[in-house]
Structures are given as structure tokens and as C-alpha cells.
Image 1 (tube, chains in turn purple, brown):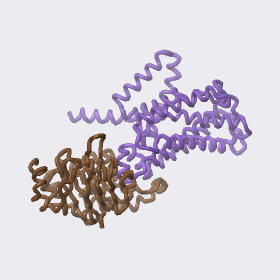
Image 2 (cartoon, chains in turn brown, blue; image 1 turned 90 degrees about the vertical axis):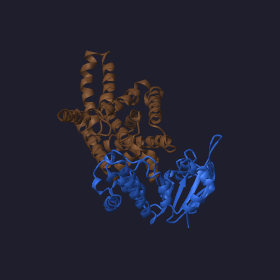
Image 3 (cartoon, rainbow over the protein chains, first blue to last red; image 1 turned 45 degrees about the horizontal axis):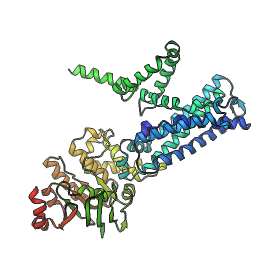
Image 4 (cartoon, chains in turn orange, yellow; image 1 turned 180 degrees about the vertical axis):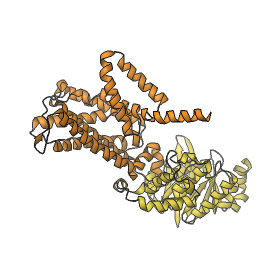
Length: 274
Length: 244
């Protein structure tokens, strides 16, 4: 939504993911609240609030470049990781362990299958919401801002309001992901809001294809599956290979892996014409 | 009634005075031309009018309201629309989507999320496409249009929101004679609905189209009047016409 549809190149999704996770961590360890609906609501609210403040800071003034947003959000991720590492309320370097299993209508979800379906249900709702938004008139507005934000302003669009709205929505989604991570893993740690995850999320989008929903999903699945195998087989070489893969994708497939079939079709057509 | 009024508008870039105390006005349904040699300050003055840059001194009124330091989106909401020198349309989007982008600009986010205006806009899109000879290309991406058609699409996008003032920056640049004649007709038609300010190099084009012309030289308006008065003005001949 942020980068692919609106052109907001952000490294801050991990920070917002971490905020969702930590909010759930604090709430569940300091109170008896375990209802997943309420926990998600609190996490989404916290993420949206931080997203709103950050969005106002980033977009309410004059137009800023993609690089500026990327650098500021990268710095925010770094600050969040450092803060989580040093603040005792957040468990410092140890994070917050012992987060209890969530409940739904009073029933505890403690099996991995149950937690999977819970995450899948939230994911499905989020995906449907994204599809509805992108296919509405507002989807076109997001693209107008992405493709030429100054031109959009000359048509009368309130560019900053649109960017802030999308940023808040993405922040809420990231926070809900963090909340689900916290309840399914049972702990939160500083690394979940840090630079590594920030760059990894961008990597999924670049590899999969900017502006598509299934592209990052494919990239995430492929990378995660390969990651587990390769980290054992080639522990020191694997990160370099990932970097190389990213570089090659950006050069030869700027629209990501999802554009590969159309690229092949196009080259076949050209060969037939010759 | 004056739609647009400029009172001693000056734009400085450091020590450089790009526009020096320019005053002019545009009335309802009037077509006003702004001409001048390269580097005379035409584009800077147009940018000050549309809000791309702000005037250093002076006042710009749009229907009597001071918009001198208002951002472009406020001016757009007040009824100002612009067509840039190089067509700034959404090349990857279809012609229909381009027109829709312009039409829905003033809708609230909530209305857009519900696609509440879509049905009402379809009729307007069809009418605009017919008026600007684009009906065959509605589902085509804008990048597949010819240069002239891209210029028309941008004028159509500007006219889509029923502006009170249309700003055109060299609307016929790079067009064939036939396309220029068609564009002239389109601008005349547009002037029945709003005031038009044209910044142009092509004197013949601007002479037959405009009610009044202002001539800019070294950032100063050196002459204003009807096309005939401008043609016969010795200052204009000296600073502009002899250079062309």
C-alpha cells in the first residue's frame, strides 16, 4: 500500500510491527486481558497513532523525496530497536517473555494450528481490505500521488492528507502483524522492530514486485523456505547471495518476480516476429 | 468581473529579478495571451500564478481572493486549472483513468473509498472524451496517444473540473498545423465556460485566438492590448517581434 501504490518508500514497517508486538506484550503481562479482538484493537490503535504522528512529521510540510522518507523511517527503526534494547519497561535486551496464549470468546487458542488459522484470518481480512481500497476510486488517487504528486496537487488533491492516511493504514496493518507475532511466539524482542526486519520487508516487495499483492507473498514464501535450507548449508555465503539476487532482480526485473511470465511472453513474441 | 488580477507581482531568485512588478488581469470568458522572448519570465510568472512558486512581492487575486501565497491545491479548489508545457498526464493509466483522476480530485477520501461518484463521473468522462476527440482511446493507456492527443488529454483533464480560469503553457508546442487548428477551436470553446491565459511562442496562433495580449521582456510587462495594438506597438517590435 505504502510503496507500491502510493510511492512512500518506508523502512519503518518493522518499527510499527514492533510497536504492535510490544503493546500486546505489555498489556498481556501487566493485565489479564487475553481476548485477541481486544489485543488486536489496542495494537492497531497504538500503531495507527504512532503512524499518524510519524506521517504528520513526514508529509505535512512541503513535498519530500522518496529518499528522505526512507532515511527518516530507517532512523526510526533504529531508534525503536535501541529503545527496546535499553528500556527496562520493555524488558531491555531480553524483551518480554511469557506472553500468554490469546483467547477468542473465552476459548484459549494454544495449538499451532489454531494460531495459524487466527493469523490467516487476520491476513485474509487485511488482504480483502487492501484489495477493496486499491480497486476503489481512492486506489486511483494513491496512484496519482505515487506517479506525480505535484501534478496531483494541481488537480486539487490534498497530497499530505492522502499520504498520511495511507501511512496510518499501513502502520495499523504492521502493528496487527506484530500483535499476532507476539501472541503466537509468546515473546517479543528488540530485533522484531529493528533494521534487519525493516530491510527484509523491503526485500520482499522488491523481489516479489512493487504494486502487487501476491508478489511480496511469493517472495516471502520462497525466501523463508530457501533461507532455512541455505542458512545451514552456506551460513556465511547466503547473505551475499541474497544481496546478489536483489541486485539482479532490480536490474533485470525491476517489476519483480511476478513480471517474469510477462517478460518471457514478450521475448517469445519478439522472437516469433523476427 | 476580473477573474484573475496581478498587482505588481515580482519574483526574485536571490539577486536575479525574474519578474519585475508585473500587473495584468483576465476577465470572464476572456482569452489573454502572454508572450515574450526566451528568458523573459513568462514561465516564472505562470508558476507564480498557479502556485508552483510564490511571488516575492505583489498580490495575486483569484475572483477577488488573495491567493498569492496559497498552495496549488487551494488555487485548484478555487477554480484554477493548468496545462503544463510538457503534458503532465499519467502515462501508465488509461485515458478514462486520467480523466477520472482529475474529476475526483475534490472528493473526500471517504467518498473515494466508497467509489460514490463513479457513476456520476462516467457520463462526464464520455462527454469530455467526445469533445476532445478521445472517445476511441478511453481504454488505451495515455502513453499510446500521439503528442497532440496527450496535450488534448491534459486540457480535457483541466477542463473536467469546470474551472473558472484555465492556464495553458504553450498548448500547441510540437503540434501539426491540423492539430493546432483543432486546439484553437478547443480553446475558443473552453473560453465560453472560463477565462483563459495562454503562454505561447507562436505569435500567429496567439494573434488570432486572444482578446488581449501582454508582452513580457526582461521580467517586465512592456505592452498590453489587443492583438492589433500589440502588432503595431513600436516597443514590442523592438523587443520581441524583431527577434522572432
